Image 1 (cartoon, chains in turn yellow, red):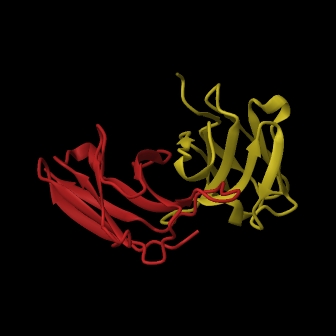
Image 2 (cartoon, rainbow over the protein chains, first blue to last red):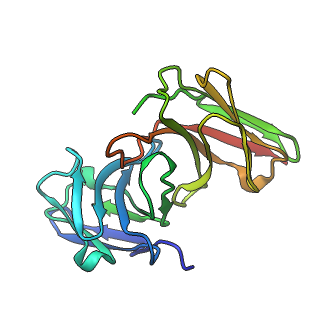
Length: 115
Length: 112
């Protein structure tokens, strides 16, 4: 079990550039989640996939953000025309079931710094 | 999801027990109580969860009040590696509940 893997761990970019992050979930998990976390705050939900279908998106996910999960395996999160306010830790999690017993397993995150 | 309330910070000494409280007075009958923790510069890590009965696992114990309006995460012997932010989260078993809704958690400091 290799756990949830995120790449890159750190990304520094200039305002206005596009960035893309990758998440590889635990192999048998069909559910995948993206969260964003700023310093001193708990994670905030961004979006959720069940297999390849994106079933829920937060209002935080503006039109500059897009997420995909082709073939229900890995997922990518792209941010277009980055802004300084996008600076945060982006966390990916996966799980094998839903409902009240849903346990989400998190990656180490991608820390984005927008200069 | 119902809201939880936790102290902002707590302090403990190494090898002593730690009791981390969580209030969830608006909990519904189908809500599970989950605990996660986040070590510095790492992603959150699942600790334990329960519905009505107390639960034990290799990491911790979860004590749930009889009326379920509060719970306590118990670390039996704190180590320096237990210094982290601990989050108490309610998850409904009903409907299409998907996301975790996080508060600010309790930042636990462990003194050597």
